[in-house]
Image (cartoon, rainbow, N blue to C red):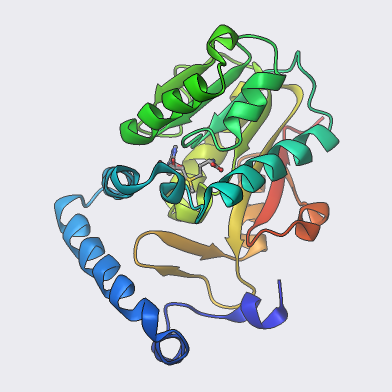
Length: 258
Ligand SMILES: C[S@@+](CC[C@H](N)C(=O)[O-])C[C@H]1O[C@@H](n2cnc3c(N)ncnc32)[C@H](O)[C@@H]1O
C-alpha cells in the first residue's frame, strides 16, 4: 500500500470531492449507498442488525459481490490467497479452525476440502450469506466433510468449548466492524484458542486519522488494535509477510501468551 493511501481520510469532504471529480461514474452508486445507509441506520441502531441488513440487501443481488469480490475470478483468487497463506503458516488437516464471518465460503470451501471432516467451523451474522455458503458446499461437493455453519449474534463464542481451535480466522470482518465488536472478539478469543493456537484477522489500515465510511467500512491504526489485544492479555503482532499479497487490508496475529 502506498504511503498516500495509508494517510487518506475517506470520510473527509476534500477526499469525497476529489474522488467524485476523478470517478464521476461512481457518484450515483455512492449516493444510492448513502441513502441505504441512512435508512438502515434509522431502522437498526444496533451495528450487527444494521450490517445483517446490508448483507441481506447485497447478497440478494450477488453473494460474491456481497463478500467483496467484483468477479468470480476475484472471488476464487481471494479465497486462494487466504488458504495459501495459512498453509504457509502451518495449517494441517487435523487442525480445528473457526472462520469468523465465513461469508459464502470464498476461502471456506478450500479449508473445508483440506481439513479433516468436522474440523471447520464457520460463523456469520448473516443468515442470507449462510444460505449461499450452503450452495457453495453443494457446488464443491463437500457434504461429506460435515462442516459446521452457524449464525451468530455476537463474538462472545459462548457456545464453543475452551481451548478448542488451532486457528481462528477473520478475513475482511473487522474492516466492517466498530471497535466495540472487535473488542468483544478479542476479549473472548483467548478462551477458545487451543495451546499454541492463533487468531489471524485482517483490517483496513490507516496511518492517519481513524475514520469510517458510512457504517460499512472502518479504518484503524495498527497500534490501536495491537493495544486492544494486549489489554485482553493476548500477544499481538503485525504480519509483514501478508503485505506482499495483492490485498488492500493488513493482518494481525493474536496468540495466548506461552
Ligand atoms: C467481506 S465478507 C468476507 C467473508 C469471508 N471472510 C471471505 O473472506 O470471503 C464479511 C463477512 O463477515 C460477516 N460479518 C460482519 N460482521 C460480523 C461479525 N461481527 N461477526 C460475524 N460475522 C460478521 C458478514 O456478514 C460477511 O459475511
